[in-house]
Amino acid sequence: MQLWKNTALTSVAALLGLFLLPLAVAREPAEVPEHTELPRTEQTAPVQPAVKAVCDADRTLRVLDGETVREMTLADYLVGVTAAEMPASFAEEALKAQAVAARTYTLYKLTAVSNHGDTADICTDSTCCQAYIAMEQARANWGAQADAYEKKVRDAVTSTDGEAILYGGVPILAVFHSSSAGLTRAAGQVWQNDLPYLKPVDSPEAKETIPNYYSRVDFTPAALKEKLLAKIPSADLSGDKKSWLKDPIRDSAGSVETVEVGGVTVRGGTVRAALGLRSACFEWELQDDNFVFYVTGYGHGVGLSQYGADAMAESGADYQTILTHYYTGVTVEVFTG
Image 1: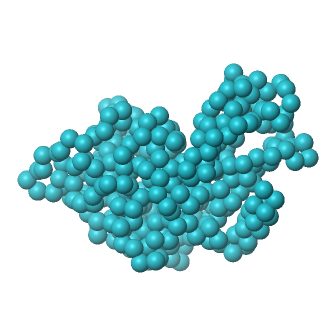
Image 2: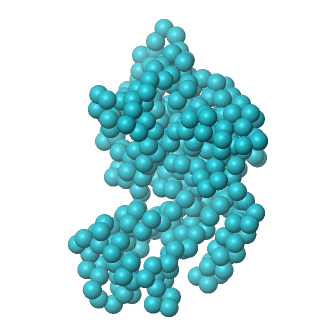
Image 3: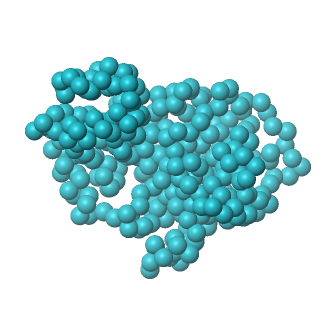
């Protein structure tokens, strides 16, 4: 534990001084939300192909942006999503992988029950659907690199026009996250049920260059109790503080799958949400009567790791290789449905 803490603190200090992503001053890659609803049955029925492939520019979306519903083509929407979800400084093949994942997630949402009823197909709220940024704002964030970065993002979308990640002939639930702890997680380790294409796989995380890859969060006992009880009201946190959290069960990725909180067994993701931790890959200890949490990675850990994708791209992998690595048993091809 002591070695881990020293490494974590040293890494954080170095990163704060040496690394800033150029997407926005304080923004890291977004991710598909933790509360993503998984299908109860596998979608494996073949889809009858149309006469010809449908291009992104031929699909129109109703996008809920704040309180306003805007109509835009899938092509324009994906440019805004890719710019918001992944730093434009990333390798071109990583950006292509992100564009295809975002397209696939959108196509999946179009066939699933909408969160917005008849009002809209999808929204720009990253806690509900996918992050989105208008190009004018993205260019302002990019500064002197605006022209080059806009071209990279647009090329990532247009060069993969119409392509999606398919399992059994239909678009998958292409969830993604910022960075894993070196191994991604299975869907069932985070949500209610497993999916055949969301399995744990190795992920090459360049931890030295990932901002806040290791993070530390301190809580007073009173603050911890308040946050945990707000999320887990049946927990009994009246006894010895050492017994408030105990018996963590870790999954193959090292993340907390379940943990006992005040006598109640909950998912690690529940504790993560209650305490605002960057991931469910955490350890904790009592230090000077305060609770100290040490966290690795950022996000739910399922599906594509954005920093892992960039590391693969930098090593020479193309976007199709990246996607078929992170999503098990899939194909990447133009979707004609």
